[in-house]
Image 1 (cartoon, rainbow, N blue to C red):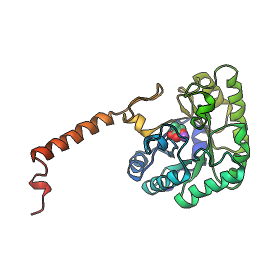
Image 2: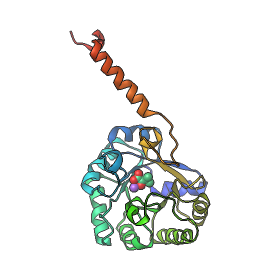
Image 3: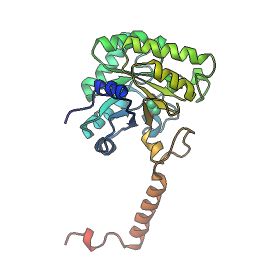
Image 4: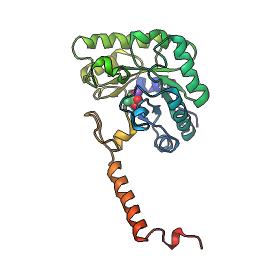
Length: 264
Ligand code: KIV
Ligand code: NA
């Protein structure tokens, strides 16, 4: 079968169908989510934290993310793979955004890119869209601006909600195919969702958005202190702890390997 396209996502909004997006950073987890029918996989710059161990998304580079994106594309067959443009790879100019997106598409086979910001990145969005690169936008809590925002906190309360709405409309006009809304009040996310023809993808944005995204390590219960907006669908950290302790104990006792794991 073919990959999910931006047209499929637009059609889903017209039908009122909600869809999930999940992050992926390697071939095997991408394969599990793809086989489960997740239509969009995001190679997030959250890899900075969950893969590379940095304490924000700022240090991660294209050189870090391109190989992960290639692995996610190789490990999946149905999902659209969206690659997150990292901090410093697109803010400089439309030309820089094009060159960075081209690396994701040529070297990794990504199907779309994501970038953070509103009206300040419209030239980048327009250049990418005219070059044939589908663009997912990202508003609200934009972690690449954490130092300007003064921390990881709810965005778009009060008057700044009108700014966010204006940004969302301009991004849609510039040709973005979807907008992530991160950490914004549910009523604002609802108003943006009904005002736009393109799908909204919420994370900490309440139930009204057209789609929901979570970092897979958050939804599987691997991250130690997840945000309020995370629901844990599994307790992976405890299960892995239990399993590796059992392995260690059986190595110590000699119970592993048993005859059935052994060549004669
Ligand atoms: O980097 C990321 O994982 C993201 C999602 C949380 C939207 O940008
Ligand atoms: Na991101």
